[in-house]
Length: 405
Figure 1: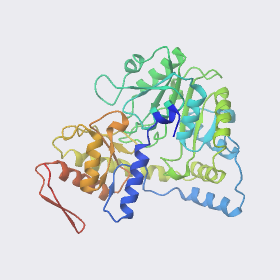
Figure 2 (figure 1 turned 90 degrees about the horizontal axis):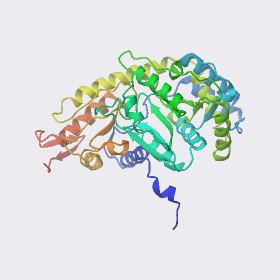
Figure 3 (figure 1 turned 120 degrees about the horizontal axis):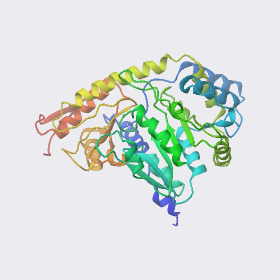
Figure 4 (figure 1 turned 90 degrees about the vertical axis):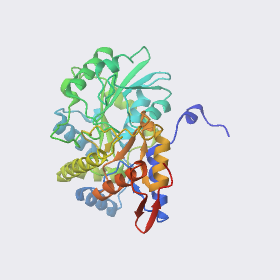
């Protein structure tokens, strides 16, 4: 069978594939611990659930405008004014089926074949694939000093004649690194001077630890005209624990948003009107759930980092926010794909290979689970990797025996 060159260049989402693997093993009764997901355990806000159910019960669940309902746009505008100090017009806003679609439609609107998009590495698994789906070239950038915190110079060195955009995710998936305010100021100024699009993926911006505050990209922008190339992306999936609702949005100049609306109108039409109704209720409703989730994640981060530091060979940079740790396991196994498969096969712990995020030897471990999942999951990993571990381990009633070195 003949499929397109673009389709052949795209790999499956590693995170979604692992979610399916974990679900299948659980259905078989396997004692799986899933440390690979990016999905909070907490429930969606009650305001969202009540609002969605009310609209569903009314029976008036119809098509939505391609760029979102009026109420959804009003909620996004209010949210942007509250969190970014910027008042935008409805024409500057598009609601999409998740922040992922907002990014995808934005890239489709700005990229020509062969043009490049630069983003710091490690990176979210979908960034390179989305760029390739548009016929463009992804250009990951590693910090020269070997940390997870790039400098402007690192980005600048990769900019060439085909560079069209820079994409920033802060705090970062998979590392949890929050870039400095100076870095964001430098990037905004640099992209404005060079005429590059800057896509700011702010999906985790309220999930920060150790007293950190969200960084406002608009604070450093000078161009607010219709020529502005700054695009802000956000959504309800992470902070509101509404991953399955698939509501995100983008804010940009009117000409870009018109193009994005045209594309989305032919691609999927508007997001579900019922799910937008629920998202509006979450944004406008009681916000205590966001802080509760943030505090839970910070505590889980602390537990996971402490447990990982018990490994002699593991290097860990404590995350500044988001849902993840990205420890370096290369002292045990440099091939992260083999390591992740080994841990799944031997001790039924699901992790995500660092290779999927652009940095082999690492594993992405999620802090979204319970404290029990985190502590037991790390204990299983330590038992599997540490040659000084006891010879036996019990998973419930099942006894495992180390038959490897």
